[in-house]
Length: 112
Length: 115
Image (tube, rainbow over all chains, first blue to last red; front, side):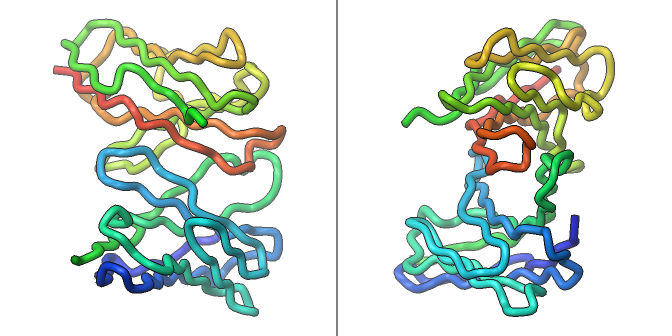
């Protein structure tokens, strides 16, 4: 699986959009970009994933650059409950790639 | 919808004792994963079941660890005998599909402390 690079930490004002970047410059054509988050003392929570097109769900939007070497997770209106560590994961779509490998992630602090 | 359910949420035991962790996957899911998370090693996959059959147990640390999935709605992870280095948060996750690369949904975890 391709390696990802994320900033160690970020702050965001409550009510504003939180934009979390991820670099995955070695991504392969059959690798998906997944985002999970882990709120303190809870299990990892799936947020969104995509291959090449931008994706949106009730939690967030995922913007993937045309060359697929980077992506941005957008939380449109951050709340205090969005304070968590956010993990960008690249996974190949194929049998045997079921292990989720979490890096260090980005610690997002939403500030009142 | 009920998510993945794990019990107990917290467990404190003494070295040498047997510990059993329990997991109920999301109804309809046919893949189940046990992970362990520590500060030092991050999140590690211990074992992966598909349709109640263990597919990959290469992450199980040693013979002291065993996992079973007697039916589609229940799995156990047992440590016998437990050691202080087993202290960690143990997560169960489930997904629906055949390859295991489908989206995994995690339970709240069991915090294990072995004294």
